[in-house]
Image (tube, rainbow over all chains, first blue to last red; front, side, top):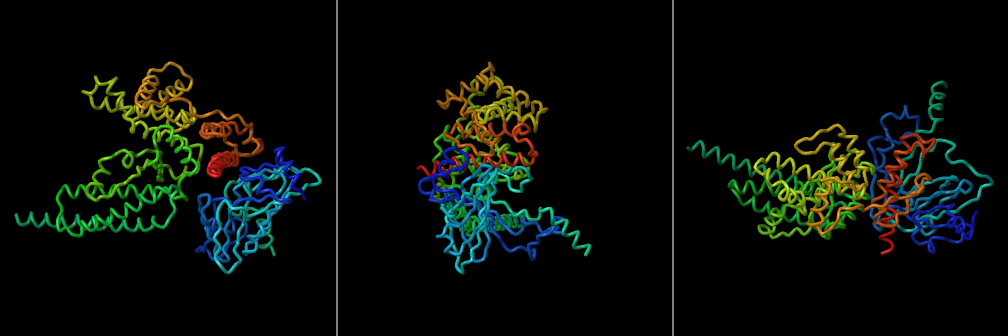
Length: 199
Length: 362
């Protein structure tokens, strides 16, 4: 895990790119960098479809993932409401690019974790784009979050060797807004559906 | 005679019924818009005034048993005004407006006018980009409302309509610079004055006169856009109407392209010279290159540009187009569809980062 001087060195050398880094002094901690809540959201809502079906695309039919989420936007500094048990897809205000030998993990800042918001995401070396923040309010109360606030923290890890991010087809490329789950595109789902029919 | 009177009374009642129906429709839309967030705070007082105006009209109509022809026409005009406003307010919700593009357009607008009371609003349609001058330049409408209902609308709305299909397409959105050019032209009456000065001799032929004036309007809007987005609008024009010849409203596309190219290269061109000279004379501002050519391999490295100033802000469109047209060399091993998404996303993020930083540093 990288420490503050190591992270700073990589930022100064443009190996780790973070745009915009509005307040470097405040955002850079001893082991992590705080990132801000972006302004675009996909908010889960009740749909006429009874459940989200993670199956091969052919089997899912008309139940498109989009029908379970609504897109919404806020101005910087405006607030977004999270209802209990509601899932809201957000992204970081910052656009990140990682070098081939550094991966990172995204955590909720403890002040927000204590409200009942949790998160744990791994970001592959070589990733470029805003980071996805999958928010779920596990509190019994409604939580209002302000866009632009430092909500998550990212810890960096040095890999033993370089990896090639583009060596395989990527589902989320240079994303700047939250993107719906593409779980349905996982290739093994078709194979599993075939197996299911054969049993 | 009695039958005629009866028919006339019935017609009056029908008109009043229709106006009540319109009021109900308008009320529903106003109630809805009163709950949402607009992309520009200045639209909130505008909406409040529309609500007040609707109430006053309702009270006025409720007290009538018949309407004169003038009253009918006045109410129709007012309803059209309210409905047009509502259509564009609806399209200017934060969730629907192309926020980053409008931010760039606001900067261009500021170059030419005091934009304190000018709000760029958008609405979605199914097929084309266009500018509507009704709510920005037709002062008699606002004067009438103020004198009759004591409601003063301070804001003027610049109405830009966008094909819904292209709302988030930054490459095509450069057309909006052209549409904004129409506003500037009409605001300063540039084409109007060129016609009076140079083509007064054809005033006896109204059809030809209007056609010629429309040609100047299109050429002006093309040059206006070229100040900010270079010749990229030419490529779009060539794509959608490359073979179009002179029509009653638009000059031949290839003529338009030539005027823009001559403007950018500084080559001798009579139309271009006329428009440039008249614009300088009337506005005390010059039609000139107002973008800078961004030299960067950031997009190639999958990074948004760190825009430094307003010239680079407008230059992002030219840069984005260049990246897209050279995608084969730049984004090797990435298919066209993903290359488009990358370019489009990076244009959006480059603009939005500049916007965020400018707010943050205030």
